[in-house]
Image 1 (cartoon, rainbow, N blue to C red):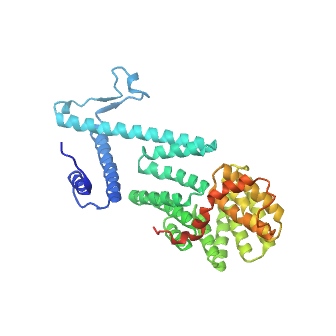
Image 2: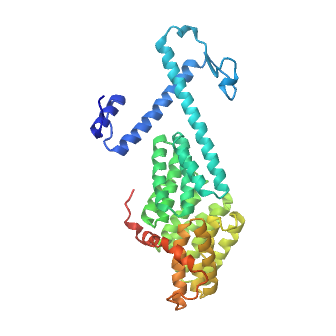
Image 3: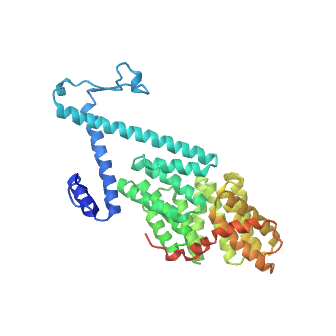
Length: 392
């Protein structure tokens, strides 16, 4: 039997199955194949509905075997009874239909199971369920499943993975050509680039996002733009977008966005060395977060909100309070694999011991914390040198 191997044979097979101009790279070929399969399924389903709408009886039982004769779908078209080609084409249509429906049901079951595990704080099980769902669902469901994976990557501090998932989501949104999906993927790309300190790219994605986004989510874009300008020390522009963000929050009563804006204000006053105002905004952010997010070590957003008060306490020389809060944060971050908080706490611990002139880190209550957290040291390099990462 003849064996096909190599990129040339693969391209030849693609030309036979899908005539026309084809991309040459392997990733482009696989993406093109998925798009063609989706288009083929849509054509077959459309033919199935058009050809059999009047001549098909669909039973409503949850299992076809529950009906007498085993018929979940009955074909009663006498005009095509003798046409074998027509019957075969119709049979293929229903075969594809059943595969699509079964895949969709399994995908939705996996997605719901992942959501349940996420609420139970079993994040590894939630990740496995959502990854399994991505292999079963169509493009639209895949887009929303990637949203869950992006949120989970944010919780774990896997910002590079978050960026890769956002790029995949953007490609799906462009393929489906829907403004809402494109806007959401642009927002995820901007958030990922902001977390990776690529402020110029974050601003670029935000500007593109505003071309597609509706008024209900524009506050998140303004927040990303304000944070980017703050990190680039363009305070006047940042203040303008912070004001717009607070206006959106009061209009739509979005308390979660209020927390982000208060944290940004605290960071701005910290940079300007106005420490009492920075502490006031940080404490207000924690108060609002207690009413919005679940309070406890498992809450990623509440934990990250509390972490922002530590550098203010260090600047005010409240070192004992800062040390206790930092120790509490790093314990919960180690338990729930939040590498972002681990990396931040490493810096805070270093500042606290430097100001205490405790360079050998003597008298620690729990040396295991520092031994375990040392495995996250590589994050510091990623945090400060990520600007040299490859651009999308």
